Length: 317
Image 1 (cartoon, helix red, strand yellow):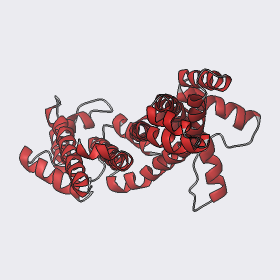
Image 2: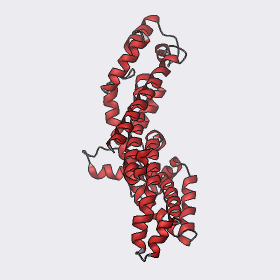
Image 3: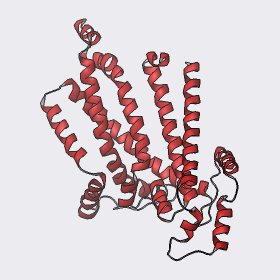
Image 4: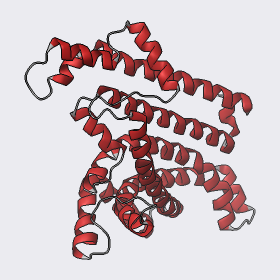
């Protein structure tokens, strides 16, 4: 097990190094001078002195290999430099925004898992039955509706018509825990709803597949209780694909919650990325992409370890 974990950690570090190199290279190979593009955002032409100052501020006046070495060293220390726009530390901005996005994703994932796994299991065990047909039809309907449309509908019904929850905004938990949780409900539900549809489909398919295996039929033929057969022989063996899908979707959600955060005015990492792209704040964009990539790789590392605990054969691959 230890050797498996070491191999996976080494692969994760190598992958992160490759991604970091690609992200660094993009700024070098893209046509045009980033400093000149930044200064010409508002129209007009910048003076050579202003361009030189921005190039020095971004470190573009040094040789490429020196820039690359500095980039790797600073990234290893989680020092992403300062924003070109507001001159603030990029690490501080990410540290402020990232927990808000992670909170949204984690709460949404918990809600999705709590509903989708039991529903998918029941649908798989009763394939073709009334519950399966109803749940699968509702799942397909939800899948076909974009997240921002669902968010808009939630605001209309639960905030404007019923007045049960706030329409959006953000208040820190430490400032007002009750109001923070109220503002969290609708965006977390919006995130969890689409994640739940994916988990439901995978759970139903995995349970349906496991039902047909010989060991399940043998356990049932021995007279074991149905709940015990489902828990030990069906659901346990079906968890591998489910965990993989959940982990991949959590990584994808890091970059795809931008519309949800926009609809609910939730100040997360996605909003910071959009703002940095609009303002051509290249160091901030690079830092955010690298942070999301690192989290995605970390999630996949955890998935590999969990999957190897569920299915020891994975360690031999």
